[in-house]
Length: 506
Image 1 (tube, rainbow, N blue to C red):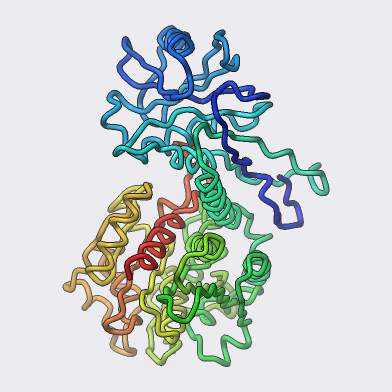
Image 2: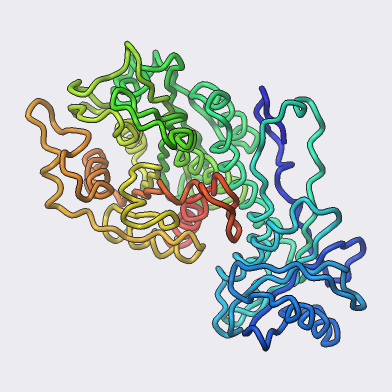
C-alpha cells in the first residue's frame, strides 16, 4: 500500500478471514495443509480431506522432499479430486501428539506468508486436535498475522486504489473464532504499520493525531498534551528528550471503559519516533532501524484498541509518551539535571538512555489513575538482545505479576522471559548531584539497570511489569512463522492476554 504523503487508515494490507467447510470450497485457488512425520514417512494433516486426497498430497510432498519442521513450507503441484491445483504444505513437526497451539499458529502463519500475493482464495485446513480440542482458532490467528504485508513507499502509488485484500478461508473455524482472529490480526497489524512508517511521516505530532483518530474510530476517549502543556505540566523527562527536535513531543492517553466495577489496567509504551542517541550520538551504521524505537507505543495503542473491540471486562488506559531524540543546539546534554513528572531529579549521563526518561514521566502519570495493574513496554536496551537474543522479550517487575505476565506471554507464543531485578545493580544509579542518574556507568546488566530505574517511579505495592522488546519488536531479517520482515507487533498479544486474564480472574 503506498503511503507517500498520507498515512494509511484501512486494513487492506491484511487478509480477510472467513470460515469454510472444506478444502474444496468454491473459488479456492490454493489449499494450505499440514504435514507431519519424517522425510520418508510424511503424513498430511487436513481434517476435511479424504484418504485419497491426502495420499496424493503426501506423495507430492515426499517427491519434493518437503520438510515437516515447524515453520517450513513447501509449495506442491497436486492433481486430486476436490483439491486446488496448488497446495502449500506447512510443517507441524514429527509427532502429532507433540504439536502445540503455537506450532499451529506458526505453521498457518508460514503458509499465509507464502500464499500472500497469489491470485484466488486460500483455504487453510491444517488444524489438528491439541489438548483434546480443535486448533482452528489458532489457524485463524496464525493466518491473520502471517498475511500482513509491510507497507512500501512508491513513486507511482500515491492516490492509487489499494490492492484487493486476499481471502483466507479457515476450515472448521467458528464465527467467533474468525471474529477474534480478525480483531487480533488488525490490532497487531495497526501496531506493525505504525512502526513500519518512515520517521519523516511518523513524528510525535502526526503519531498522536493518527493514534487518536484510530482510537476514536473504535469508541475510545483520547487526550493529548502538546509540547507547551508538557513543559507547563512538569513533564521534565518527555520535554527534555524532545527539546532537541524541531518536532515537539506529545503525551497521548487513550482510554477504554468497561464499567465502574471492572479492574483498571494501565499501559505505558515508549514512543521515540526516531532515536539518533542525541548528543551521545549513535554510530551511523544501522541507525536507520531506529525508526522502530516507538514499538512499545505502537503496541500499547494496538492493545487498548483490541481490548475495546473484544469488549474485555477491564478498564484500560494507554499512556503514550512521544518524542524525537535529536542532537542540536537545544538538545539536553550529559550533565544536565531533569526534574521528572512527580518531582524526582535525574542527572543525565547518557542522552541515548532516553526511553526510560519519557517512560518514567508516563508511569507517574498513569499511576495517578490508581490502576490495579501497570504494564510498560519499550524497545529499551541493546542489553536485552545481548542477554536474550532477537525473539525473547525480557519481563521485569514485581515478582508475582512478572511471572504471571511471562507465563501468559509463553501461552500466546511471544515467549516473554522473567528477569530478576538484581538489587546489587541499583547502586549504579546513584548520583552526586541529583536523586539518580539515567544510565549506570558499568556495562553489566544494562537491561536490569533500566528496569531498576523505572521501578523508582512505580508506586509501592502496585503490581507492575516492564517488557523490554528491543529485539522482538522489529525483525531485521527475513520473515518467519507469522512474523514478517520489519515490525512484528510484539508484545500486543501478551498484553491482551494479561488484560483478559485480569478481567477473568482479578
